[in-house]
Image (cartoon, helix red, strand yellow):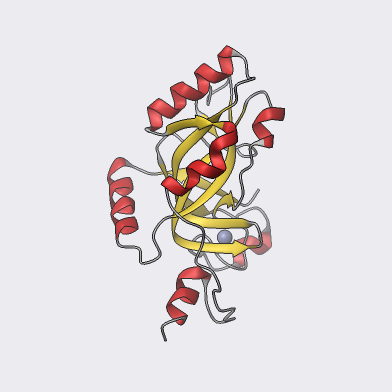
Length: 198
Ligand SMILES: [Zn+2]
């Protein structure tokens, strides 16, 4: 795998939060999935579903780590997300609640995204993401419900009914700005947004 979010320090998180307040687009809302493992080093933490990455703080920052092949080593390092790379913190534009109904350790929730953001159809890749709310499924066993509530409380995230994720999302932000010009020179939606005014 080529990319992963990293946990940032409290001070970096504060600075990241500050950057969000001055973002002309405002927070963009997205949906994503995690797992809460019951054993192992990341037990009882919110973990990326496919990577060994714990979301131990409410705010995560993306970092490109594509050092997997010799070709990758020859590439220039770049800020994540990059349009020609797969890096960035992934989120979807529509709720992903099915995941947590099928996977017994699965959790679905709402994130806000800011900083650099790349959008490709239903998927977004962001530089910064904050966990805003986690969905609880009424039909889970008590153990999973408790695990999700415990993680939410640790991260300062809200709890919503799994089926209300879509409705609840509006409390945290909006969709990406519509009709962004498809400027091939633009790098990410920030540049395309700026292009609207130039
Ligand atoms: Zn990259």
